[in-house]
Image (cartoon, rainbow, N blue to C red):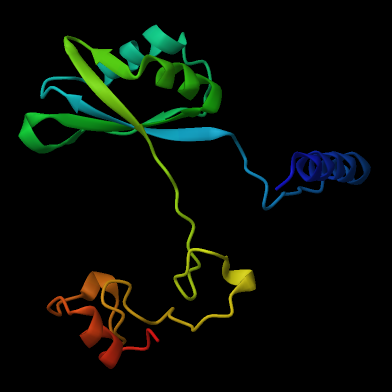
Length: 171
């Protein structure tokens, strides 16, 4: 969406609220915030959430923004831990400038999460549902492409792509 369109939509939203009084409005298609999601990996096994927050605040300053989110710490391989941080883009740029985050005595890596949009109807990555002209795969299993079950109920052995095309509607 272009910045001009976003500004126009916000102005229209404001005007409607002023003229109508109590009517609630909602803008769709405009991002609610400019946040980024960052994966922080490589923490030692005794790192706490408070230590992570302290290390982040050491670089960005106090996190006064109420929109930041810090997930629970989860275990990774080799006795390390990871955490996910959702933060404002400006503060994320400050973190990226340091390349690493020092938590205690450990230097942890940071990686930006990249979102890949996908049409939920045909599973293509080049359009959304409203412009979809592909086959309807909403009832197909996302893992194997077969029908009659969903991914979470999957118990079929992995198939080769040639087998998959023979037994499903992927063409």
